[in-house]
Length: 262
Image (cartoon, rainbow, N blue to C red; front, side, top):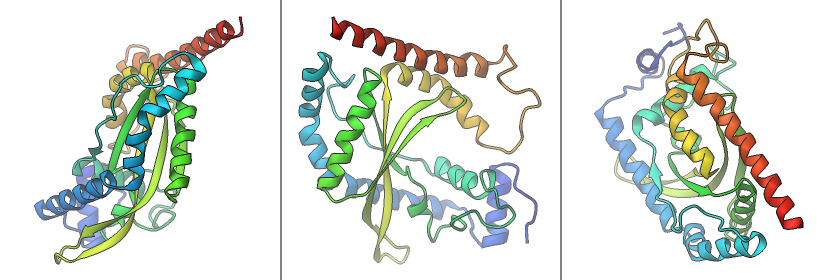
């Protein structure tokens, strides 16, 4: 058995093979593409997504009537994306190893392996809505929750605020998909689809932060000097910019609210 805690993704792949007889190969990648595409297709044809497309302009108009501003930055429904296999595998590494407080025992809920990992990774299929102002985040989430209730779909809301300056809200829609089995039959599984809601300013900083954020999540090693003290680093500038922009957004809302009271 492989008892050493894998320090990077390459060692993790070796650990999967030795400890769980999971051989990451081209076959795994091809099967992942088939499954993820099917999950995406099922979600696109779901009553929830169809209803959201139908109500998209109405939701924007409702916010406009209440505030005098458009809710969304873009006047179209965003594209639904599929997580790449490499990013998917990296997320199982974080769940099984990096964030596993029970190591070397299994994490809470059990190991995330091919038999269950399509139901345990919550953003295989995902999209991002960009709203103009901070209050638009909660406004739109409430509309999504109402729509989930009508469609009888559970949803989970997570307002994220990370020390790296990342601010966004995630709504996870719990639904079902009939995915292909490796023997070419099909089976129904429960999946979570991620709808991220962020603001226009945070969307800009998210793109700047993303590279550093992803790099930090790929291994267990930690810098001796925390990024908060390394003022020359790219992380120092981009991460604190994220916090500053979030503060500025709050100030913009305060000014807007005062103008409405006049």
